[in-house]
Image 1 (tube, one colour):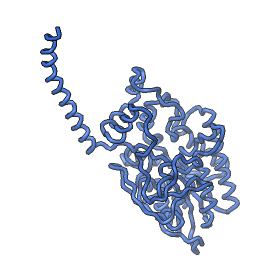
Image 2 (cartoon, one colour):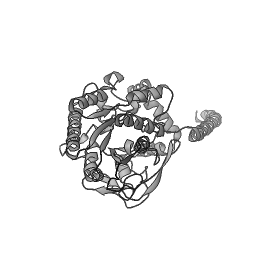
Image 3 (tube, rainbow, N blue to C red):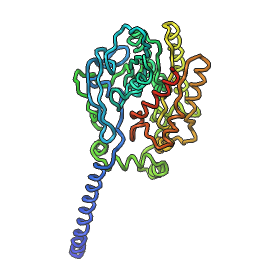
Image 4 (tube, rainbow, N blue to C red):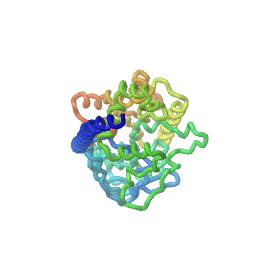
Length: 395
């Protein structure tokens, strides 16, 4: 029987080898085409990673602060290329004298990566656009990538009040609301638990650097995730298609869908029903806004809360894609809920609130891109639109 099987095996070997070769060539051609044509979403905009780059300095109170007198280029292939520089006090943009020039209105803007201007160049941030829209006004951008509201208040008290601002604008992003430390016994804020050491280098941290994989499977998966556009294309399509993702979960090919802790923090405040940790985080956020209001009354500046429109709230398919590989359904969310409640909070407390959600949705319906492609941050047009909404309130 062995003698009879050998010719059949040999006869099949040629076609099987040809099929395997054809498959490999096809995969290589598809990979090459995707390398040229497909732009995968950035792997992550990890706060600790960015703060560990040479553009930041470790700070025992705030976690990190921008390094003074640095310039650099931030490029995400196929998405954007932006340049930036900081002044002698680490503020993005030009120098600002501490003494306010006579006849000049001063605005200090605080916030996170949206305010700092992730993915846009100096001159394109909403702080820069705001200054151009308001003659006789100087705008100082105290935005810092990956800051939360607690850090923003601390940076305002330390740096922003030195400029004797007439107005303080808070660019509030919904991902600032959830505080995972409130669910932990220690309660230590994550920004004080830097997972990687800060460097003195002027070069950004390697975005692929991470702990070594714990198994050969994870090693292969990590390699493909950082090297293969075909792998990223397939994974992005699977994770963005609810029916396909859940089918693969039922078949045991994919693991358990993501729960609350793995949810995009921008979506958390839009849940119709809050888990205890999120409810506590919401209360903490409102308490910090009251603290800002007290500070504004004590120091005599006008406080304006500018609500950053989240991508999933403006672009409906983005919400569905975010929830595809999730235990949640779109009906579990009310995208406008946190914005309504923050506006109501502003009316009740006397805090001015700017909510440009309507104009962002109108721009999107008209076909105008206001976010970076495959990314949650404003592009230059989004910054201009956000600045217009704030300028109208300040006028």
